[in-house]
Length: 119
Image (cartoon, rainbow, N blue to C red; front, side, top):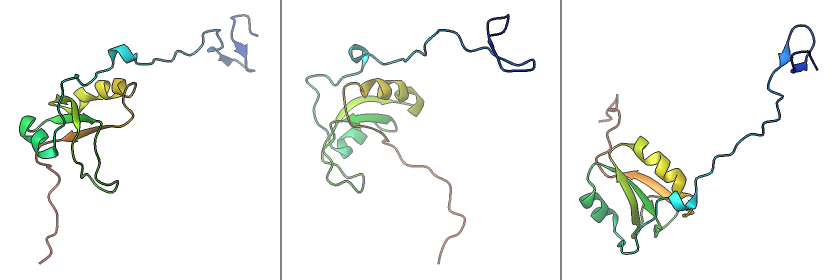
C-alpha cells in the first residue's frame, strides 16, 4: 500500500479504485414497470396502425403466426410514442413483467433511396 491509501503499482503509478465500495446494480422495480390495463383489447397490426399512426408502439403478449417474419395475429399495446428514444426506459422496465416485448414503427418506412435501379 502506498502512503496515500492506493495500491502501489511501482514507479509513480497507483491504483486508486481499490476502495471498499461494492458496485451498485440498478434494477427496475416491478411496481414501476408499465403494465397493460385489465380492460385492454387485443389488436391486429392494421388496427394498431389505424389507432396510432406514425408512432412507435410497444407490443406485448403477441400471438406470432410464425417465427420467421413480422406476421402476427393480435397483440396488446403497452404504450405508443412519437420518438423511439422515449420508449426505451419503458421497454427496459417492462422486461420485469413481460418476457417478450417488441417496439415497432406504424408509419411508412423511410430509408435511403436505391442508387441503382435495375431495368
